[in-house]
Image (cartoon, rainbow, N blue to C red):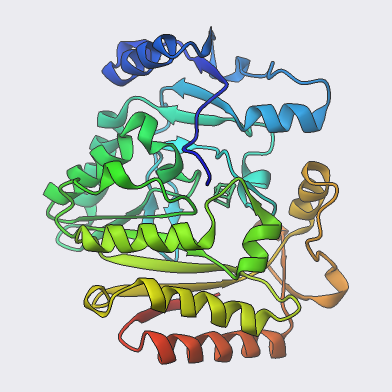
Length: 342
Ligand code: SF4
């Protein structure tokens, strides 16, 4: 059973101790005997211990930086939400295809922001601009926020904040099952709690350090019982030997654990596996033994932003994925909504 994340090393940035959460985290880690280093700036967190790149990379993923979010301008987050709300960056998981490897390349450590009130105030301004239209915020664009929230409770705070808001909705996705502290949050149905799921083969081979499929599904049942609207992101859909059976088994497990009474409001998001050339380089550097299929020749090139195109599956393969998974969804969860396939 995978244990909740616990850092081996903690850095505290200047300014973080001016906030109650910063103080609280410092006390918590001091009491627990974790090594704490004070930094003078965020960029100083360079000296992660380790003798080579791989050791440093691994150690960074068990390092927590307690910091202050300076940029309160939110990125957009299409197609699942209007904005990304930045509560943390980085993740302790070792998913070989994780997009954070390229976006956070030089900073693979986990950074949590203690100025949660300021971040929520910024969210308020975005909501006001669009009101009376609803504004959706995605909290898992730059980290697996659920996986670290048992330490900080900033996500819980945000869930309750959006619970009280008139025009805001929150959503996030996780590969972790450590959800118990979020079950009693006063969410008012305004947070969609999503789980990233995949065929067992894919999780076992490419998502090291995350919760097994069954644990994620059991956690989804718990949060649905707590009244949250739930969702499943099937991503990345990865073609492997026996993939149709693998994804069918995944739906069987969902069907087994989710009682019919909890199926009124479920969404599915389907994302096929893709990679870019820079991502391929980073993956092969961080996981030199990877079995992940990253052969440009076998894929279809899709033009992307800033001239960085993606390699997706061939058109007929995409159609096969879509038809197969839609069929499973119809068979097991006809009442659910598929939000998109990309
Ligand atoms: S759990 Fe999510 S954020 Fe963390 S390494 Fe895996 S894909 Fe990346």
